[in-house]
Length: 398
Image (cartoon, rainbow, N blue to C red; front, side, top):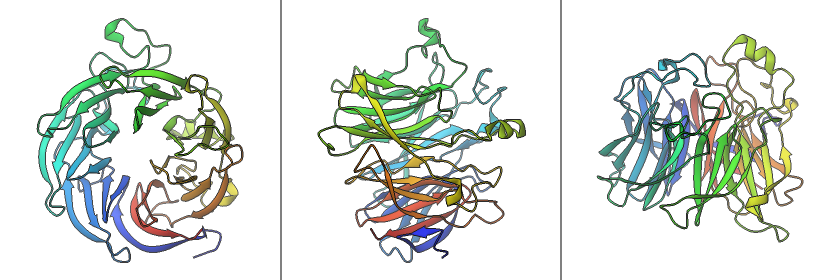
């Protein structure tokens, strides 16, 4: 591989899986949630015990019309996938969602028994509302679901008790002031611009990316009464929406540190693509969150357009999208669309340093790679997926 396309990272293997929204690795099994495709493929389950030869164990189809299931998580023998309406099937005028939602009865999430990884068994399909579920976190007892719900504008947090997977029970809800229109609240923004992208649980806290609403820390020590303990919004002036937010495991210099990443959003028209020229790309942030009620940004990390041969390819997205949603130490593994995999050390949170990268080739017929998600397993192996095609297993040599 061209030395400019990889630094301290080598490919172990590649599979030409259809485009994916998420890769999640548990033990020696990888779970891949697929983006809408002609085969209506929802989820692939792979044996990665031999990373040189990953082996497909099972695939789950999307049965509901106009739907996709591009996110997946597994704890023990329980797998959850989302059911969300395809963007192309929306009966609305703009991407902000200002027009009325058309009828769609499938939105929600599905719970599977994967005790036999080769034969996933559907346990239940939980219906929510509207477009359905976008993203989520889960543990052995609860699922932290980002979904549209009747009476609210944009996705909110709904926490379900999944102790009995066949009968999930709603425990509580959390939303930004202004979202609960049925309760008399009035948003100060247009459409669905402020919404929960998703929230991740760390201890008794949820760390949330809120799209154009910034980021928040939510106290769930009382799981039935989630309470906001800190929020920070940097929109404007930064144009790209907040995707994911999480704390660094250990304090640095006596301070509690967090990282956030913005998603380089779609350009939905030629006019919008023209307007985007010259504006900042989606990037990685570091925050001092020692006092969540007074969190402060410390630095941003950006990838130069000189660092990828496909940075100017259109209509491909170049900037950041997502990072691995748990950390060991101070390394942040980032999926950077046309920039591929970027590995960033935040040991000095005021000056994040890139320590490795890997830029895969574009999928067949595409102008640029679109690295969409990343995970790292217990062996330290790195997994990336492309939103059009491709599943790579990589090794980082620090």
